[in-house]
Length: 166
Figure 1 (cartoon, rainbow, N blue to C red):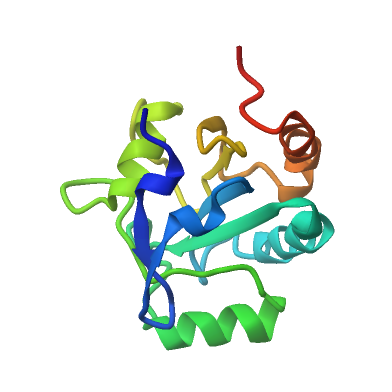
Figure 2 (cartoon, rainbow, N blue to C red):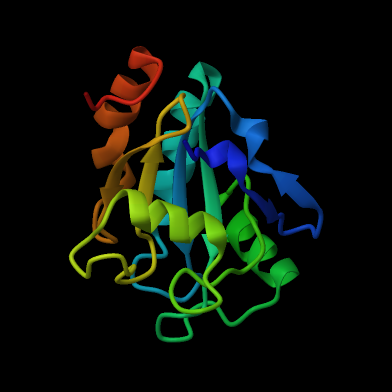
């Protein structure tokens, strides 16, 4: 059975990071963009991370330029923007594609586990996937779902110790 631990990704700083680093954590994977109407969600994502990180919760941000070219910057610009404007301290990764032939394998897996309104495709920036401590996808959230609205699900996943599905 595939889990989030089976993947790796390049961090904003350029090093390859094995996502097994987050094994046993509840993970919220988000495709992000700096020039999107949903960009202020960075503040909510950081607040959620700060609130729950000591309980084993982490947010992983994956910038994506596939929707309206709303993430045009280089990795160093993205990191500076997130830190300066939203105080982001959760892990951020290098830009990825989330749809199409060049989609990152992590997002191919996430989409296959939880389909959305467009089937397997991601609709827009700030689509979110909640992954349980067991590394399996629990839920998918639309771009307009505010991070605060995920708090109860994140807490339930932390308490359950794994997937909340039967």
